[in-house]
Length: 161
Image 1: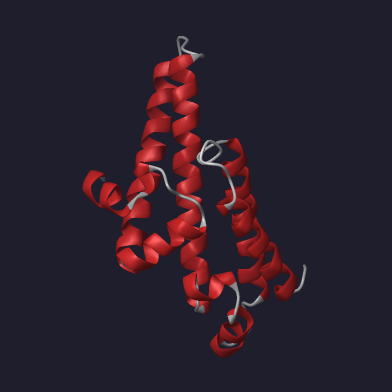
Image 2 (image 1 turned 135 degrees about the vertical axis):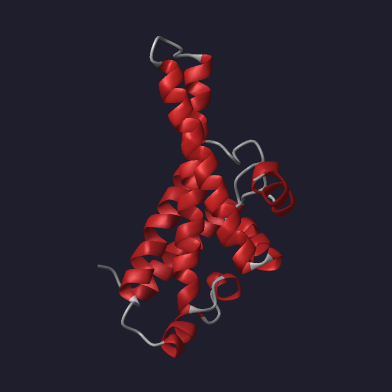
């Protein structure tokens, strides 16, 4: 396991990479890959500070990009959940679209229904966690991870699911 400081630096680099994506690259495969990498590193950070105190985690995050967004040790788990829900919904939606557009066969109805249910469930869970954290914190989350598409925005999330 890498040190928390190194993992934090990796997270900052990934966040910068996400925010430097061209608008045409947002919500594409590169963005999806960067989000997956961010989730992996954030999970590493959460595990490496598991036995640390709240104060030591606050000190670790102080001055970093994550300080304003995460700030507290408990928010690491919230961010992990949110990113998991985003990735799950995104992946299920892409697979469902692929079935509809390219791969519609005899068993497609069943697979399509399962994927659509999976996407809806992930978005509902995302809404629940986002609602609990509040509009401002959720918008900070979206900004940090380049989630600029309408489907990830607060108003859409609150209205639709």
